[in-house]
Image: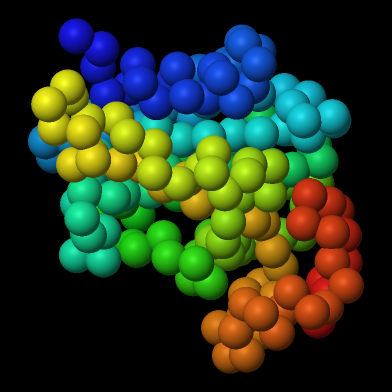
Length: 190
C-alpha cells in the first residue's frame, strides 16, 4: 500500500518532471505529531528556489473542513536555502493553531534571511503551480479516496509595512501595488 507521503511526493514528482529535490527534516514540537519535511527544488522553475512542506497537513484545525488540509509552497529568487527552512519552521510552529487561509499574514518577527529586510509572509495561491495542480491532492488510503486531501497554499515573503497594509486594507488592495513576488531584495511596495 502506498503511504500518504508517497502519494504526495509522487504528485510533486509529476509536477517537477522528475527533478530530484533536497529534503530537510524539521523536528516536531507538537506531541503526537511527526515532524515537518522541507522539500526543496533548486532552480525550479528558472532560477527560483521552490520549497514545499509536508507535515503541516498532519495537524488538525477547525477551519480545515471536509478532509482538506494545507501544505505550503514558497518560491523566491534566491539561492539561500534559509528561505526553505523558514517555510518549514512556519509550518511546524503554527500547525494546528493557524488556518493558513488565503489573505492571512504571518509576522516572522525578525529578518527571514540576513540579506533581506523581509520579516513577514502572506498566504495565497502558489505562484508556480496551476490551480489544478495545487488543489485536491488526494493522499487518502485506498477505499477512502476524498477523505484526506491536501491543498497547497503559497507562502509569500513581505515587509512588515506590507503585512500591516494587508491586515488593514486586504490582500487584493496590496496586489494592486507594484511588486515582484519572487524578489526578496525589493523595497516595500506600499
